[in-house]
Amino acid sequence: MAMGRCINHPDRETSYRCQKHDIYMCEECLECRDPDLYCKYRESCPVWFLTKKKGLDDEPAKEAAAAG
Image (cartoon, rainbow, N blue to C red; front, side):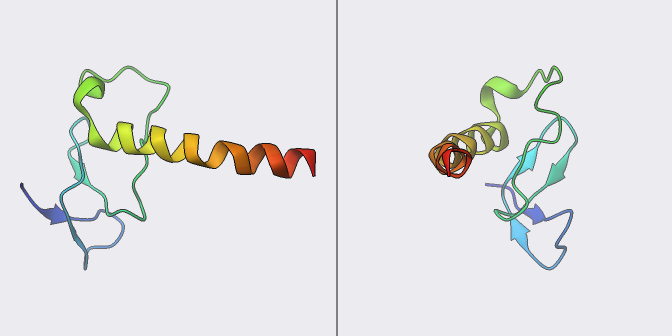
């Protein structure tokens, strides 16, 4: 797997690459930059998949805080 340097943390190597913007992101920075805009790479994008999964994992915590 290809490795690159995180756009926000150049000291970190990562394999997470946004194909649309051609940038690398470490796990800390991993987030889709344009979630509401069309992306022809979305179906095969690990950044989108992991961002979406992270959002689902956070949903119960958000609901609990709102009910609080």
